[in-house]
Image (cartoon, rainbow, N blue to C red):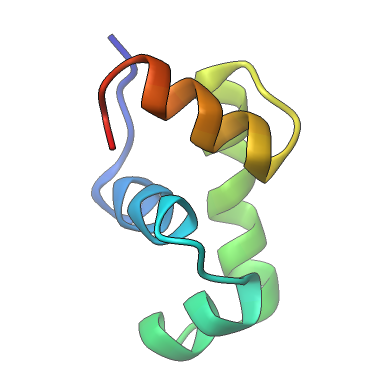
Length: 64
């Protein structure tokens, strides 16, 4: 089971919804760097290196 912080989980859901980093920044009212610092551990938790791989992995696991 992959454990994410609440903010990482939120960012994960937004990525899976197809939002760009800039859109996530606007929605969360956080800087680009802060959002990127949440994305990195999400990728690491799922052992992926891209958004498309993350979405594919989430779909395979039934998370989206």
